[in-house]
Image (cartoon, rainbow, N blue to C red; front, top):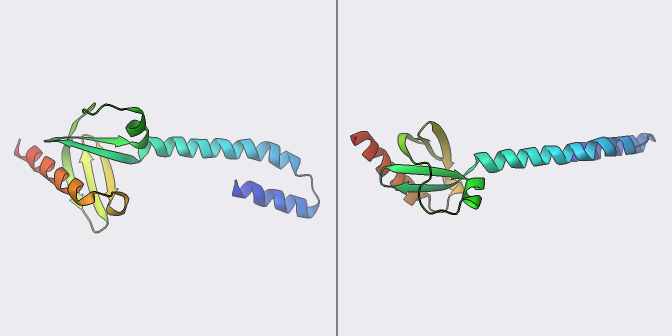
Length: 123
């Protein structure tokens, strides 16, 4: 929306008509904002459920709309890498980067993921 406002401001300062910019730009900006929100809601991890050696990572969309407590699509922790800012975990075929600043119970989650990874390695 900011680019639309800047273009409209320059057009108004130059004395041009601004309605064509608004008619095309406003719906375009709304569609872009919707698309970005849709993508973000379906890719950002919001919940990690650990049940022994099985783990499920749910996105914001899945955590909100799927109210079941059990694991719907469990997988093993294939790989677990730690860094200063968080951990990178591979659950099944998907790799997630979980930053410590994004999770309130980060230490408990890290310990649970490490134990699930150790159980997977011992299989």
